[in-house]
Length: 294
Ligand SMILES: [Zn+2]
Image (tube, rainbow, N blue to C red; front, side, top):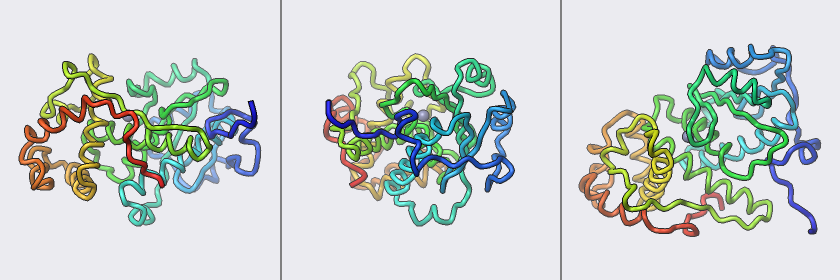
């Protein structure tokens, strides 16, 4: 079958070379995690935890061959997101690192889960800027689950006051799907980002979507898909306006006030936006995602 390109989420063999994450003593880490969940994680079989760090993240893990591909993907997504949000300059002044805890054994992951709230879509837990995930070394990840969670971490660093749920989840999907596709392309896989259309009868009215504080348990999938499409729609309609909207929403201004002010000529109200967005949301868009990482 010829040569198979290396993938960053490939287990052991691919990661024993020069780029393997270097193990660092806990006391030598450049930063601590103030998050109490981090302390709880490290208290589960404390003897197993090793530590390492890269430019923007600190990792806690049991095996470096599991942590190394995570670190590669983390830094990759960091670059994609800061570029997409035009924050490369700004982030140079933020030197705090996000902490990522990688569990391997299912029983320990279950033990830890009682402390945090699982994200229904990805199964990871993110809390106050730290990420807790389970990676089974025997299992290959080929989707954007990890990328999605890493986008949340980067967003949290840029907008630490929290942004609305639809925007957080929608952007995490939007950016991680595109990044994943370009990641695969960089390794010569043919990959096109895929975006799921919303069935007309499942559509969540925008006035409801933008005020939800968590994905509704009976419509989790629609919530993620529709949020992603809304982000995509707003960003592709006018990128500078989208960035201005993100800033305003991160300062907790109401969507219905901010939208007509920023997208003045385009959407006079949330209803006007909804009218145009409904059609966009139900279209099958599998191949039309703009590349963000050229
Ligand atoms: Zn999420």
